[in-house]
Every structure is written in structure tokens, then in C-alpha cells.
Length: 135
Image (cartoon, rainbow, N blue to C red; front, side):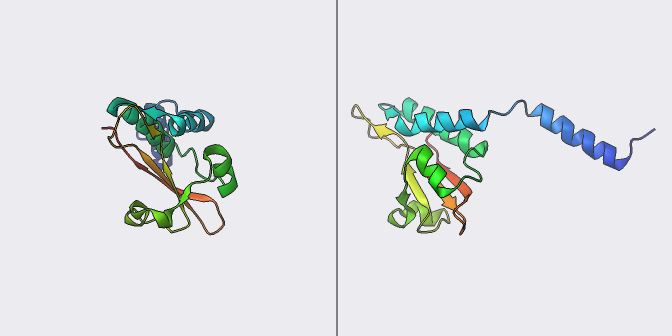
């Protein structure tokens, strides 16, 4: 009458995975992140669009497991976190990397997203954080 507990758990996990829908491939997330890094923000809407791309990359684990040199190839070398108070506030180490996402143009003086990439002692990405500018 009732399924075995293992079968029920498997069905629950399978159902949850299907309910989440298809995930965006990491290559696409990385390409979108590169686009956001190079974007020009001339409005709050443009900044928010870049912020959404960054958040998708964070949520989709686009950088997870990458080595420091791979991140540098993808995004360029980040600024050392030691130069940015936001890193310490978010719990990052001084040698982790901080990125300003995009460039403010056209008189736009509002906030722009920021990306912080944390690395393990072995130089592998172990955490990523986005200063969001979108709802």
C-alpha cells in the first residue's frame, strides 16, 4: 500500500528536481557573467540587468570548482579583497578577489553590482558573493 522509505525519498528528490525546471548550462552562465562584467550602466535598469546575470551565475555555481587562473582567464584578475571593506564585512580573506561589475556611464551615479570570489588555500573557488542592485 505504501512505498518503501527509500523509494519515497527518491521520488521526492526526483519530483523536486523536475519542479525546479532545467538549469542554465555553466557555459551560458559564464558567458552572461562576462557580458555583465563588460556592460555599461547608464541607468538603474542597466545596473539591475547586470546584477541579475551575476546572481544567476552565483546561484548556478558557474565559478564553483574553478582554479584562480581559470577565473582570471574568464573575468580578468580581481582586485585584492584587502582593498575593499565589503569583503571583510562579507567574511572574505584579504587575498580573495573583488570585482566591480560593469561601468557607470552617461551620468549614471547609482549603485553597480560587485562580485567577490573566494578561494581555498589550494586556489579553488569555494564561495562567491554578489552585491545586488536588483530586487
